[in-house]
Amino acid sequence: MHRAFERALPIAVALLLGCGSEPDAPRPAGDAGAPSPYLFVWAGAEEGSESDFLAVIDADPESAGYGRVLASVAVGVKGGAHHSEHVMPSNDSLFVNSFTAGESFVIDLTDPLSPSVASSFGAMDAYTYPHTFERLPNGNVLATFQTRGEGNEVAGGLVELDPSGGFVRAVDVADPVDPEIRAYSVTPIPRLNRAVSTTSDMNAEAIGTSFQVWRLDDLGLVKTVVLEPGELGYEHRDPAEVRLLSDSVTAMLTTFTCAWYRLHDLESDDPRAELVSVLPWSDYATDECGIPATYADIWLQTYANADGSSLMSFDVSDPSNPVLLDRLEWGEPWWPHWISIEPGGRRVVLTSSTGATRTKVLLVDLDPETGAMRFDERFRDEITGEIGVDFDRAVWPHGETGPGKPHGAVFSRTP
Figure 1 (cartoon, rainbow, N blue to C red):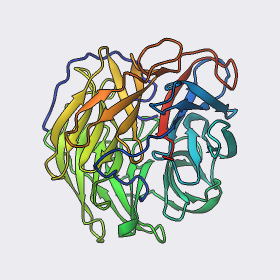
Figure 2: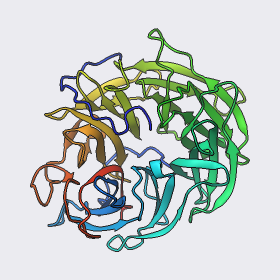
Figure 3: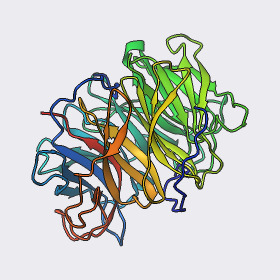
């Protein structure tokens, strides 16, 4: 698993700062449109042999049941529910994975109050342990598979799947330029006929230091680019996620060691990376920069640190010089990890790796003009009455299956 997955070490609260629609396209600034009526949350079973499951939560702020769990569906596998897609696709079928089981599922959410498992898949040919799913303009899904075969010995590949999870084509990511490659995430950039993939080992064994640029039309490798470290010597380790800025072509890459790189010349045969910012980081056990998201020229970054954790917002209108706008903290030690932004709106859904919010699904309101953030205090658990929906409960619509650990979470499409 990647460096922070399933770790449970306490962290302090005070934050130490350092220097400071296409698939997953940035959201435009401006007034929010109609709110998404539902949240879809992918969760791992916590006890016994119960199954991972997807829960549907009332996300309509005008609803009397705001924050209530309305429906759920079990997938029949307990496997460390991990990533879902980052944005709800237009066909209302969401890809999710139970990473440690090596299994993935397509959840039919055409009727959100009656979710069902439409299909499932594991290995594709020799490619094993699917991780990240991103939609392509044609409706297919580009996925990363960490490895080939079992044993974490051989780098995996990029696999294109059809909307039901069927195999379309694949390509190996192995390249002697970086022997530690393990396919972690991928970001399509349709306007450039490119995709960018990163390398980070979910088993925390290999330490990759590169990103790869691919042609979208034929999945041909353009170049494997080894990141240059900065003054601290570790900034380039474990490249994690790539996100696009407001023009849908400018890309920035984060590492799990809390560095940001701006990617240049992606349309060329010689792409490169520029180190633009670093946040304090000291150890994989306590520190991590998790999932980022972009809203116009605002970059949102989940940040866990032994001296304090937060959700941070930055102005990236000048991508080479990110400027801190705001940081949102919790009153107890926490480890924010996953975020996704409401389509056409200003709400952010957040889940955590560990700490006080480990089993909570939280909503955050983002001011698109200033980058200021606040927790949505109206979004409360129907059982405890506390802020956020708590998955530490015994009973779900699909049965008395016990507590769950939320991970991937997305808003439904707006009406």
